[in-house]
Length: 466
Image (tube, rainbow, N blue to C red):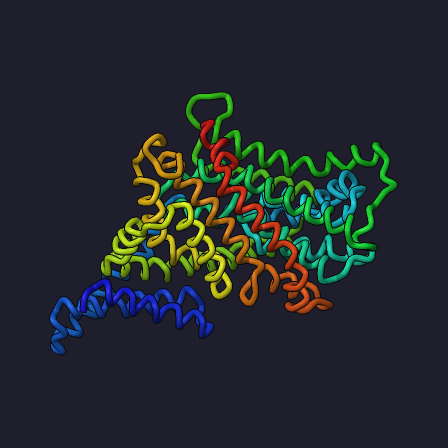
């Protein structure tokens, strides 16, 4: 049996494992090990006496993967970004941010829900985890929306959908993972997420305003805040801005010349700045311990997925599946843009059964080379490319698209993780309630993705300036 045939069979088995409910990390690790053993045994001619040798070689091959990849300095960004978010929560910065958004935006139709979306976007700028963002605002924003008469399902949907913005707006753990998998510049990818993230928040806000204007009794505006009260709400929220500006200045050096440091160092400085702010706000040992524990739990979960999937990715290399898929994609007679849209739709379907990080880790080693080949190759110039952009710019554009699809998957049933988190925080909500509440945001995400595909400049303008 040819390696490609083995690759297809094992990949099909992996999907079966996932659909049956096995965790992605363990399903991928198991499939990768089985595949490696099968391929090496096939090279030995399926000799029963050499099966043990095939197992030994497969174990050694798989064993080299976790350390060689996870020891990458760039991956240390993940725990620092997550830590920034949890420290900001325990420093009370999230409440101040929500209060400022409420005083400035709650006067519009559906104002409290709009305020929640933009507050989650602001918190996303210091939090690398969508799950953490959803959990925080489920405690802060939902009670206020319920007190104003919002439907509890829609209130939960606003928080769950708003939490997904942390996937795009830097610092973003998923963008870091994408950059490492496809070996692209982490700093430029993080920078590219700013405008699409803000754009997504704007689309969410417009959707809510439109619903409030057309549905009677939906999301009444909140009035009564004076200009003095609005301006007084800004100073407590300024630390969020300060942290974001600190990271940006350190990593991108807006004054010109070389960067002052790496994204990893920028993330560490950001975490230290938030830690000092948390101490100033009166954070005690118990709160610090909780922040560290939550960061450790989420970081370990992400790294475990990476370990398992990297074993599977190593197997894919031996099976020659990525190259075969790339050749097949480029041989299709369909329009390259239509092929790209079909790939994005496939992500939407796959996301119904897998978590966002696992989905990207499993698919990118195969899909990414195919998309780059569609554009003309990794080193193609913009003038010679299919999509009108150079190879590096195409990598950034596609990265934002797939991460936006990963956002979409965080709220789609039956796996939508953000919906489970919101339901877990609120005893008065079921998971079904939250899934019903996020339904309108599917439309907003579809519009956003369509505009990002049609107008790549939304993604590429900012990273092209550095």
